[in-house]
Image (tube, rainbow, N blue to C red; front, top):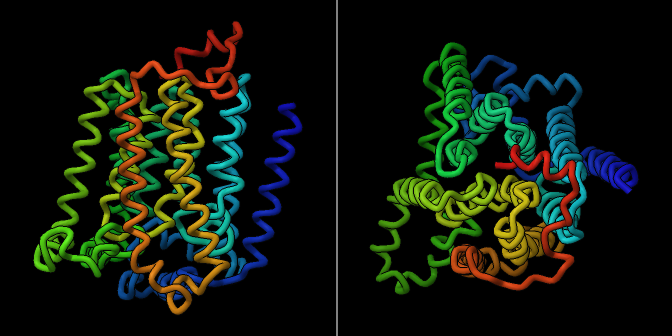
Length: 389
């Protein structure tokens, strides 16, 4: 059974890499090409609309394989990270519901298929690094997990939220993980400074100045400012959004630490809370979140499984939205533009409901169907239980 499952995952990976090549250059990947050409020409890669970290610039050297070289590299890296996570999930006997979670979150989810393989966005590489980091953390390899998260931060800045959450261990912190992540980040930015000077600071300024987008509640409220007290209040919320996100991230960490949450549970709820608050509500930011949801069965607790199933409605919402965005419209620009304008009014309440449902039922004595409950433990499973915390 495991052999067949691994063969299916391998076949899916090959099919998705083929899709990445067959779909060509589109969406933000076109802008990436301009940024990478600046890198190869020795110019400032942040002189345009580059909002990414220095690791993004290194993908320029994959252009030696042609225009689709970086896309192929990102798609292959994500597929490898996903295969590594899937292999870990298959390592021990699990309840059928655990595999259903993985299938809904990754291989059948249109957000993953479109963002990673059709569009070739760099969130794919970040999610692949996070998948490898999950496996390393699960195996208690703190330094490796921290280093991988540090690389993810050097690509896209939002994975920094995960560093302290991954370091949680029964209410304590595994400082080696944080230290290794910090070293990688500092060395990465130091190298960027040596090559490009302080140009990378433009990425931070560009991100802070961006307006509300897509899944953000602040975007959905642009036509309904009265809900929050008027246009002035709404504009203020947009301007101080960076502070709001920092406050939510800090609160999520403190709550997770105080409640002694498993690091995977903490990462799922913490990242969801941050993304739901962030004004730049791009759908691609949720690719790493789906990877984390798929990994929840590794925690092997009833609370983690309950959280995974509570996340399913939001995962399906992301899949449906991405399918409609990519294949059912023109990105909701001319076709059904009201969806683009107001989808944040659906996304935010759904994310909030997911978080409320989790915290209100986490310690509740709720009866679950047998196929959703914890898989029967065998001797080998019990022997490995210590490394799950």
